[in-house]
Amino acid sequence: MHSQSPSAGIVTPQIAHFEAPLTLKSGAVLDTYELVYETYGTLNADKTNAILVCHALSGNHHVAGFHSEQDKRPGWWDNMIGPGKPVDTDRFFVIGLNNLGGCHGSTGPSSPDPKTGKPYGKAFPIVTVEDWVETQARLADRLGIESFAAIMGGSLGGMQVLSWTILHPQRVKHGLVIASAPKLTAQNIAFNDVARQAILTDPDFHAGDFYAHDAVPKRGLRLARMLGHITYLSDDVMGEKFGRILKNDVFQFGYGVEFEVESYLRYQGDKFAASFDANTYLLMTKALDYFDPTHHHRVSLSEAMKPAQADFLVLSFTSDWRFAPGRSREIVKALLDNNLNVSYAEITAAHGHDAFLMPDPHYHSLVRAYMCNVVRSLGL
Image 1 (cartoon, rainbow, N blue to C red):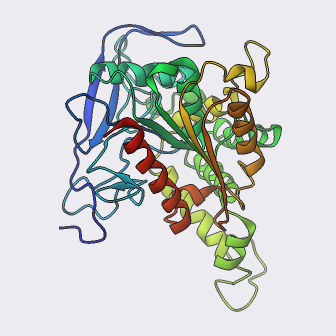
Image 2 (cartoon, rainbow, N blue to C red):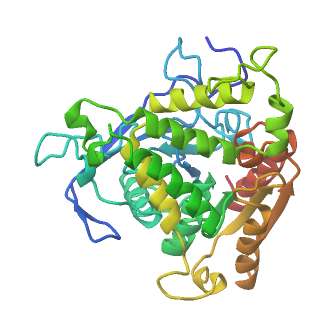
């Protein structure tokens, strides 16, 4: 048995199949689709203790626990979610899902198109944060959950939380928005486009239909991940972890791997390229780019957040330069302008954007304290 810290234990993914057509923001329609999800803890009789976890760019439904006794790696937020953890599965019923367009079981570009029996590939439509919220709401309906005790997420997951509180304000009691932003900066959009170009220009991409060619655009995916990884870490962490340490003691005077940091990035790139779908990566970064609650109505963020009724916990990290603390403060201001209850903390942490995934004691104690307030406020 896994003996690290108390865990959600062995969990089994479930599949929800939806027959009702889904009209996306782009105007495209999916006649049917599937969502893969996992649950942790027990839903109470009143169905009032449910928490939805929204994943970030490369995340999935496997949030906590293990898939088997032999499984070496727990879910991606296992340090946060489980028995006695900040999000306590002895009290809450937690749901993690793989978003539409994903590559971990939910319907996405690598899934077979019912019309052809072949992978959707380039025919799979662009999806937005708002589309994800609608599919998540349908999943909640399927599970009989009228409102969530809390919806939480980091980065792109935090954007989904904001969208939920705008689109379905009465269905969210508390929103936890962590290391996120109300919309991307021009610099962030630029990073995403360079990553996409690495994939789009890979000869093995075949305009998105690489499945039919029995190919994988590994070079493009690898470069995209290497670029992304640089932006997720802080300069201090990279310096502390690698400095200018050489693989060998002397310069090789060539273009192979010489510095430890190069070796690390190439390893991360190779690992990602072997496990993630290139079309899904394109879709997820586009969803990030498009998210902007103010865009369609040309209003301020404060006006865009007017429908929200939830209480909020907003957290940022000092060394996160990709989703800097200033962006979280923009969210806090917009919520306060609407007289909502907001708790905000800027956490001193060295890990950059990835800090929201780390078991930082101060960070975890803040989430734990807030979730205790959720228990009290809802009488759970």
